[in-house]
Image (cartoon, rainbow, N blue to C red; front, top):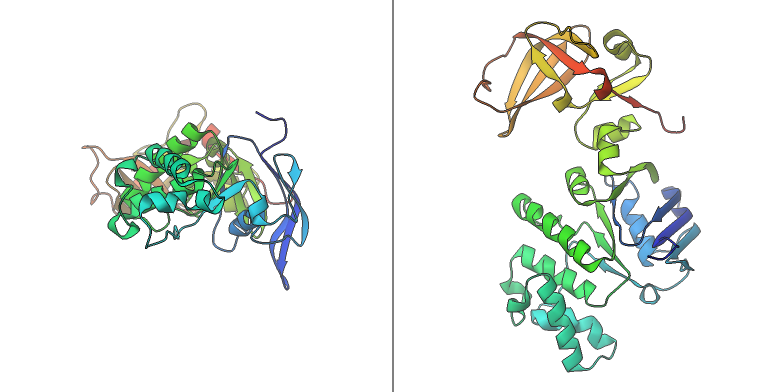
Length: 343
């Protein structure tokens, strides 16, 4: 592994007229890392990916790839490749020719490029479909062909712009596993853009959460989920119960803003007396069946409306509990302090 990071962004800014899409982003991505950029539409994540790929030029700042400044280099002069959501496969070509097209453009002889293309297809387990046309493939198969076409060129980094967004839920979950396995097999840097927080948590070594053109928080999936640094991250990455300053003082006994994940809360008929725990009384206003669990919506006395996630077992019924008085308990260590941006 080289000493220089795979990608280094310094003071990266992109403006479209009076709109600042990317606002002085500093970021380093390690070689061989599966790195995700997560955020809602308009947060700047896709623009950052386009700046790395060279499809857009920054207003200011620099882009370095493997120690080389490529800020003003054309896309074809950067040792990266991009996979888009629509895949952009050539409908008149079979799978093998689609995968080998980039090698053909580079002037590689037919026998060698077909051999390389077949190896790339074997890596995504589609070598047996080499003669088919894209229209004869499923959505997941077309996605894997696009991955093979991108990786056959052996780029140092692969940029993926929401490549699973067009797939149904079950297929998307299957492809998440296959994508992670492919990245480990190839050992190259993956930069993955998504607005799906579960997808980012599933795939990534590290995640940058974007908001209004800036990185709100950078960390591992565990760090982002267990210790969100702001109200935005707590609310966007997973589901959180948020306690503002007034409720935090009354219910948590602390000053500031805090969050507690629904699965960290428990329900009982009586308040807890265990050391290191606190509890608050409330009323169940709704119970929602989720299959693997039951979400209880509870109005705390003098506090906010919160969610409690209970495991689905035979002792709990979905349709029971509406209007029931309960005590919500939590461990002090499960309360995460939220630090406002710029604090």
